Length: 162
Image 1 (cartoon, rainbow, N blue to C red):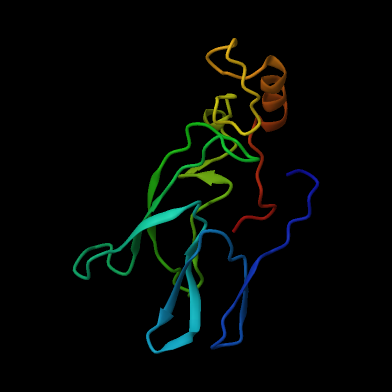
Image 2: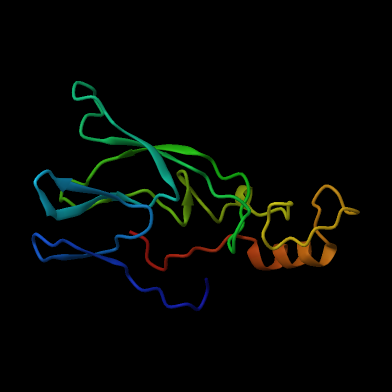
């Protein structure tokens, strides 16, 4: 989003009164049982985290969470193709800050601006104007031209990612 000013999102910890910058979108929060005022960010940067599972206590991944993530698609104002569904290991950083997993500017472990993620003007693309006489894209030539001009490459959202 070139030219836009990006605000730094923050998270307030009610127990300590501290504000931490940079916590937004797709975050996993944790709270100590019996003290819900001590809610704090554990991990963030997921598009749509689901299938969260604690690692077993006797496993090398103990202390972490396994988090499944749905990949991006061609719907919405920031269409993309081929974004992977991924599995992340969420761990809070040693200093207590939440670890970051890249959304919205990384798909899995790759930058969203890589050509493999370029939108193709498929029928699911929110900017595509259907044209049944123009397979396989099903976009009118004008709407496909607009998609390729405005959405390739996919631009970063965060001005200063963590």
